[in-house]
Length: 116
Length: 108
Image (cartoon, rainbow over all chains, first blue to last red; front, side, top):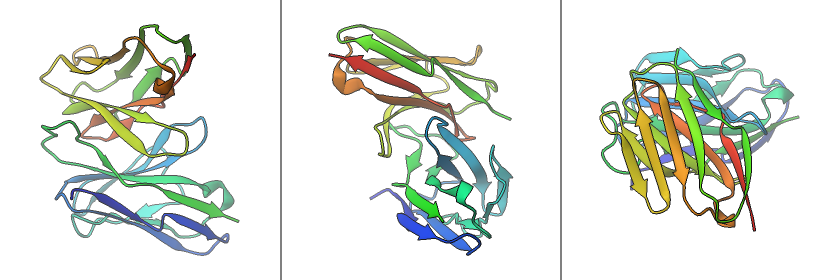
C-alpha cells in the first residue's frame, strides 16, 4: 500500500531536548516536504527536498533541520525545541513526473508535538 | 519562489448554494494543481487533481478549473450541503506549496 509514515504521532517534550520526527515513503517519490499547521495559519512549509542530498528552506525553517540521505526518508530535527514549536506537523511526498491518478501529493497522518 | 494564495479566507453560505473558491499561484511552471479538503483536527483528503496540460476536472458536485498562464484555479461546488463544511486547500507541484485555505461553512 502506498503510504507516507510519520513517527511519533504524538509527543510531549521539554524545552531544549533534541527530538526527531521521522518520515518515510514507500513510493520512490523524489519530492518530500515538511509542514507545520497552526490555527488560522494554514499549512506552512518548513523544508522541502527535490531529491537525495537536495534540500531547500520553506517559509518557516528557523529552529528546524532536515536531511535526505536516502530517497525514502526525510526526518525533521528539532535541535533545541521551544514552546513556539508546539504544532501539528505533516510530511508529504510527490513524484517528480506528477500523478496520473486522482492524487499526486501524499500525506502522513500528522504528528502532534507539544513542547513544554 | 512559488507563492499560493487563496481567497476568500472564510466563506459562509446557506445550504443549496453554488459557490466558487479561488486559488492563485505566482510561478506558472507547475506540474499539477491539487485541491484538498481538511476537517478540523484531521488530515488532508484529496479532492481533485488537475495536471498542467488540463483545463478542468470534475468529480460529482465538484469542478476544478486551471488557467496556468494566468496562475489561477477555481473550485466550484454545486448545491452545497452542510457536510461540505471544511477547510479547502490548493497546492501545486513540484514545490509542494500550499495556500492558506478557505474555511467553508454551509448553514442548514
